[in-house]
Image (cartoon, rainbow, N blue to C red):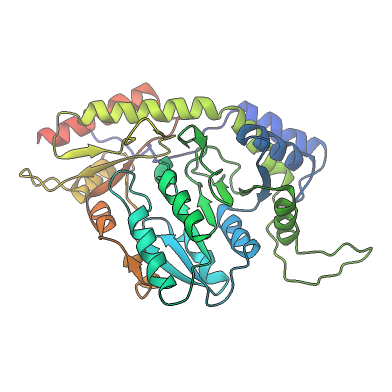
Length: 380
């Protein structure tokens, strides 16, 4: 008997704690942008990331990337090197500022930006007398980039890095938290992320002065004056006090969320270990610690004729949501004319990969149902 669809990919995990925090903003009658909950949440993020980081809450991770590009002075015609294997929100802000995105392919170990292809692209443009203005890395599905090499390259050519860690809150490389490697770091609190405030994000800055400028831009760039005066273009990217309260509650639960998502990843590794044509996303070395925001698999071409499309359709019929991996930006109609430096590894990942349910709300009963469903399919 088929079960109605009720196992989703990554639903939020909320309870009475979030209700308690949000109720406080209601009782204070402070539900507008900014406010005491925003200040408290930024302070708690600062404590989480370390005193050398200055967080600024904004309305989304996308807004955070946009503001970071503006803070770096990226303008029309500038070159920005961006990871191709990602969601469009990592790249779209480059177009917002009128710059030119140049797409960088992935390395096999992490699925993230390949340092060799990155340097190849930099040399190609410096040889033309045009130094790229910024690099945007992405810590995909919670897996850190190879920052040992990428930061070395960025320093070598003096190109600042914006680190898109929207999916990687709590992940680390060489014992350093994701979001703290770049000149600016980005985290997201969207509804499907490892912690959520329904929507929102933050820019992680390296100095108080940078944070103040990001906050200035995010709040309509209002000059210091007794009346509303504007000398430069600003944006309505401020965060809600009420949502910040929810984020504070979620942050207290982050260690448990990471522990559970890592346990779910281990569950899938055990489940698929007897199928030599199925690969589960894994940390390449002990230097990488992933929060495993989503557990992803690759179903390599095999003699059984099993494909990611077939598995996805079967799981859907059994009430289990799965999704294809991100379609690379160089294959997207919007970016098909963008220059690309890579070996098309991402094409294969997209063609063969699936994201599987990974939320902490999954019960042991849910996991048993997933296990039995998958075993039944692969025995057929």
